[in-house]
Length: 154
Picture (spheres, rainbow, N blue to C red):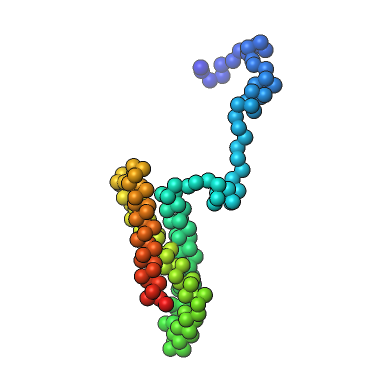
């Protein structure tokens, strides 16, 4: 149809009744479910590769936010001998060690999942069985590395 052409009006008998159409539309389609946080965590069963993907993003965010804290401690420890001693005392606190353990897990998981995603970008391991196996491997290796590095931390 060319630009500016006049479209003839559709007769009233050719249109379906809007009330009949709307009544059928609401009875045929179920209403969408509201996805609350509790529904996402406890009702919807996310496959294991999905958890790897979500935790990869969470670990990346944790590492990004922790850069400021880690650089502050590095700057303080390199400023003077007294600063090094204060950072050493600070890192001896149990809450700080626990925070560092979480950051170690974030780094290990982000590293292992990143390698998995690089292989997925190369179309290696995209089938269901291999994707599940590699996601299990990411969890096992990242937790093993976290445990090993955590032992060195404590």
